[in-house]
Amino acid sequence: MPPTLVLIRHAQALHNVASDWSIHDAPLSELGEQQCLELQESLKNSQIGNEVELIVVSAMRRTLQTATIGLDWLIKKGVRVIPDAGWQENADKPCDTGSPLEVISKEFPQYDFSTVDPSYPDKTTDLKNNPYAFTRKAILARGQTCLKHLHSRPEKVIAVVSHSGFLRTGVCNRMFFNADWRVFTFDEEAMRKDPGSFVLKESEETGKKGGGMGRSDVGYFGITEGDFPPEIEEQQAKKEGQIEELDEASKQKPSS
Image (cartoon, rainbow, N blue to C red):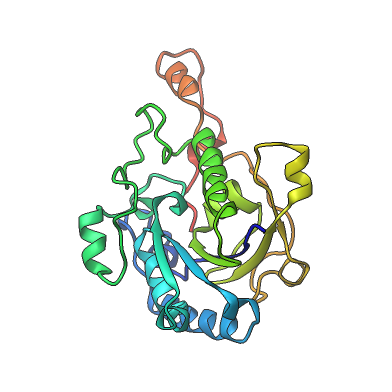
């Protein structure tokens, strides 16, 4: 049976505080560190939190810090932590671009980065078939790839620490407040109707409550205009004077 997923957004980071997208691979703020402790308390007091058998975490600084603090009691029990480039944030601004593996692995020597895609953190959009490019096509495909990998794993419950933008647009169409968490299972019925796709279904409890901590917006939040840059063809047309103005997507700001 496919695993149940506990999807977690990282705690508040420095770029969230001042909406400063220039902070490269932003670390947690003081409030973010406190939120990690609140996350830990919330999950420790839940049944599902104590059933986690694997932790998958975006290889970015703020997600690694969130996992280290917020899931501390699981890690001490021997639950394995796997850094994964696939769960990184969407945008290509400095705050949403990771650090080189040789840098981040020294900051978190307790984790094994040997399985992280060596192309990380390159988000070059003109690199053919770059899975981490900041394009709608690449992000939707990346979300499916991430879910496919988890669907076949043997663990019964897997915690994933990721980012609001990627979780919403590429994975589950839900909003996440900093350090909040939601529980999902794979929707096998929906997947049978669309063979080859991977679809999640949220638990009634976290769906109605607005996350495990009740801090997130309730409801379905799909992709909207402005989530992604325009396609390469449109950018080229603007350069050549064939269109006068890019649509609102060109003004997209990095997700927190």
